[in-house]
Image (cartoon, rainbow, N blue to C red; front, side, top):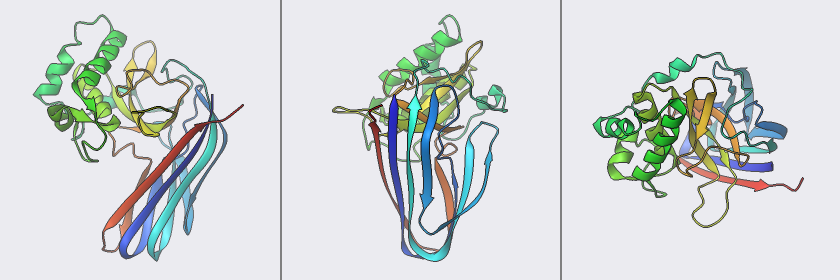
Length: 268
């Protein structure tokens, strides 16, 4: 499938700041399931800094904006050719061992309720069956309700209220997988979806490491494994760690954020 992306993020400050430094993971991953046709990232009044590929295989690009500045726009545009690999992350180069992703974070720490949910999958035969069962359990336990949670909601909090969005499904699935000893990580990216009740184009899902197969994606929000409708950007221990844009502003003042993402299928 050929997919186009138009992603605009606008930061506004209630009074000018002295400058902004950002770190981006906004270039799609290089693996057998997707190939870049064209891609660009621009930052209004920004100066491009150094770039590197981290141990997880993600391309990280630095940007700085000199102040005083009261508004910054980050725009991502491009086209990606995707192939359905049934969720398997084949051909992705990384140097970090999978066992690193057994480490918990505050957002993905399993409380008693998450542990009990995970235990329902323990009797499944094999890691792959356990992973599929965990994804289904999380889908059933947390209803997809836009706006029900916020950026800092933890997996335990989302399960307790029984509502959330893709971030909450993903962090809860990660918590359950790690409880059973399965390395798991958070993936940020895009999703081409249409129809009433479709999730937003900026999307997230989990990857669980299965012996003999490697990393496999599980989207509990949509009860499926990622296919050719998905574009993978990068990964991390949780939503904050895997955020496509991270940064800091020098100077006081409150920051507001607007995000608009459109993913469309392109006629080949």
